[in-house]
Length: 81
Picture 1: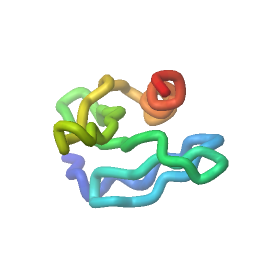
Picture 2 (picture 1 turned 120 degrees about the vertical axis):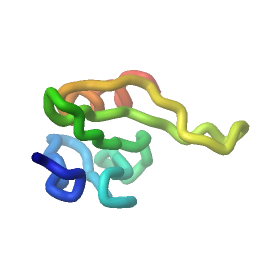
Picture 3 (picture 1 turned 135 degrees about the horizontal axis):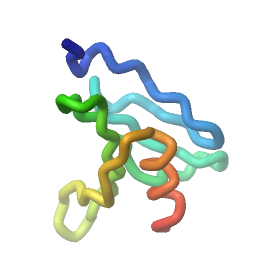
């Protein structure tokens, strides 16, 4: 069985992933601007990647979508700017 600590930092071309916790990374573009966060979740079918952004007004993380690959989640952050 896979635990969340067994998930290595995903590799996604064109961004830098900085670890925030054991299952969350801050996603930076090539200029160093924050695009959002990438969070992982272990489910029975595999690993789900969640694209999230911090909502200042509500002081919470807002989910943008769940994906089966880190690349798709990062693409969501890129295109929903």
